[in-house]
Length: 89
Image (cartoon, rainbow, N blue to C red; front, side, top):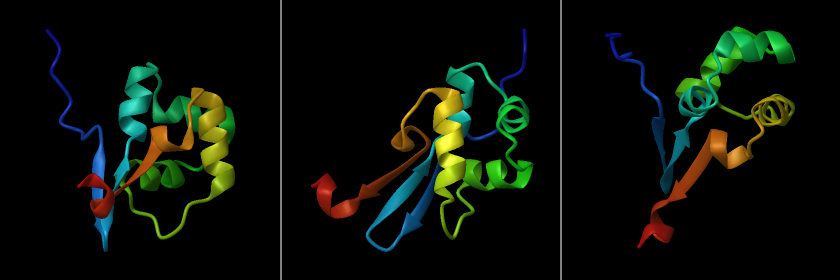
């Protein structure tokens, strides 16, 4: 029986009025894909994908997100979702 990975599937990053959910790891798992397979196919830098996975971003490169959405057949919010605390009530 295989060991379950300790890697987080969804990373939560707090911000002023809500939080971001970075869901690329979870999406890759659902699509049975690896980061390496996607970055090779779409010519994306490993560090860029890793920053998107863990939410270590100061800005989002829309071209990179579009490449990921195209390759994984998904929407922007399947990769990065913003949750507004005010809207949760």
